Length: 162
Image 1 (cartoon, rainbow, N blue to C red):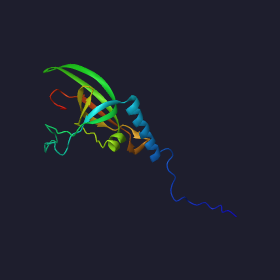
Image 2 (tube, rainbow, N blue to C red):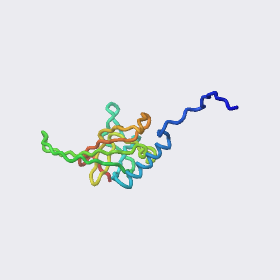
Image 3 (cartoon, rainbow, N blue to C red):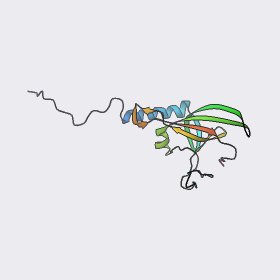
Image 4 (cartoon, helix red, strand yellow):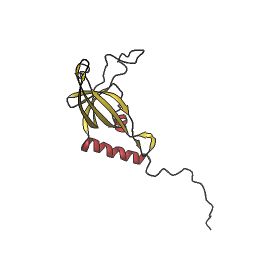
């Protein structure tokens, strides 16, 4: 005769649609969409933190040393060009916002974006001025999905990719 006694499972069931397989599927779909369908290509110039001479008090570096460039696919939003009259003459500023797929950047390319790194977009160079991680995957706080970099066009002479 079967027993009607309830027994507690050894492990709790995995959360519905929130496991590693689902996260890997989202990564695979995002990688394919960004690289083959809607993404643009940028060239990423990471700072070499070992050989760059930082100021001991301010943490700034006048001359930066860069690692070899890396081709990255991302979603790029060009925000236009603003021309304004400043006290020293006319100033022209151009900005872009780059939406990186975080896991693709960190796991596949072994790249960690930092403020102060440079990117090449088209024939222009931009410096990353701020970073943001606005999206969580499936609402899980430990799984960030996106990395957004706000970039400003580098002034001529500030960065030379050669």
